[in-house]
Length: 264
Image (cartoon, rainbow, N blue to C red; front, side):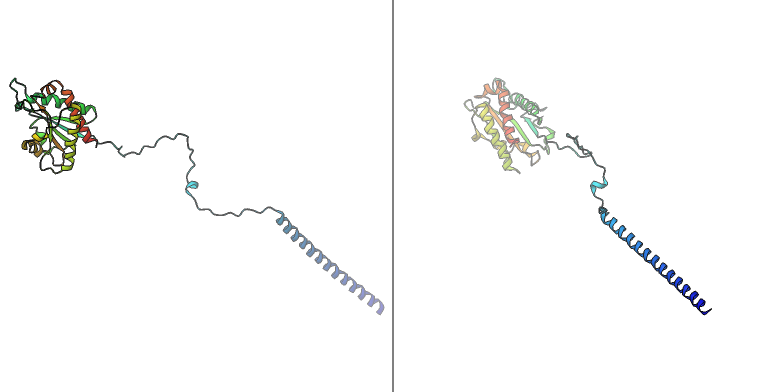
């Protein structure tokens, strides 16, 4: 009986031992399997190509506006409301000496030749020639109301000398004595001397300039900053032929003198 009891006990112990060993073996297998799985996952990750890291980029002008396509010849852009620059047109006043409703003939020769007729014929041609060149030229009378405060880039009064000195020949130009712009008016005077003399062939007779020319009434009426001058185109005695028969030549000499001044 005792032997049988010990045998049973030994069998039970062996069974427990075997059961423990089997359980430990299973646990070991699970651990090994888990380790192998971890290694496989790690190896798989290492074999994958690196992924780009997403970076937040602040928006730029090019990324926030739709792209535009440039053409080879883009159309010009016009700005609305902006005035187009324009070139200022010079204004010139041409006063025909003694011309006007007063019926003042000016100097008159024994045969009836009147200064006013010579002056007007030349003055009208000067105005036309300047207008054809794009200038704002206007004909003024001797006592024109527009002379008061007259503003322009130049004013020229056209006259002719009397025929009471038969041998006198030549022309002369003068400005007001007490000028607010003497340097500018001196340029106007010299331009007229230079160009009128060159084109007409007449000589200077400036030593016969009178106080009436320096104190000419129109000079005292126009705006102080309007350059003004008076020209005596020639003597109605010795220079009669050119004064009567060549008004276009006299006009061209005056026009060129004015252009010399205006385009300086």
